[in-house]
Image (cartoon, rainbow, N blue to C red; front, side):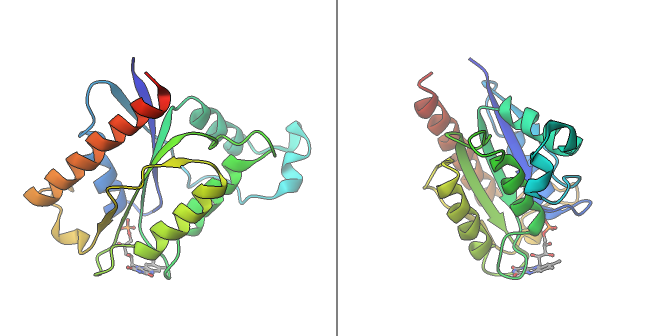
Length: 187
Ligand SMILES: Cc1cc2nc3c(=O)[nH]c(=O)nc-3n(C[C@H](O)[C@H](O)[C@H](O)COP(=O)(O)O)c2cc1C
């Protein structure tokens, strides 16, 4: 059984640390998992009026929802903006949560990883994210928690996580997440 994991990156920046870490993480999954990076940068800002009629629903929302529906689980890798989660990521949560009763988040196994070049590793952003994921009924893996501080020191010139202990730690997170997906999917 192959699991499809959606990888959602909270930064829209080219060569972002979050994107680099997400790429490293994608290579840490076993052959049982396909990782699909799901872009969120082109999503129109959520406005419920546009969900009133299917003809008004932005194409970007429809393709995001379809891509997410095709995935069995979701991994978030995000920086922190002003002690909160980036607006683009919050918008993606909102777009995926509607129309009411058709949320693409419901029951999906989830994993959250936050990071920062600073010392606090995006803690506030991750906990804001986790707060929304409660109401969205994403089945978030609680442990291990992953806050990567001074992330720029963990990456090599190619953007790979090169620091040995961080690599080992993230490999453990990925292995536990795969197990978490298996348990929840009963497969
Ligand atoms: C608008 C803005 C707000 C930021 N606020 C925080 C913050 O609250 N905490 C923090 O640790 N870093 C903050 N930063 C710094 C980011 O952590 C840093 O730019 C990081 O590289 C962003 O992640 P990325 O490389 O994945 O884009 C902020 C950056 C921006 C652009």
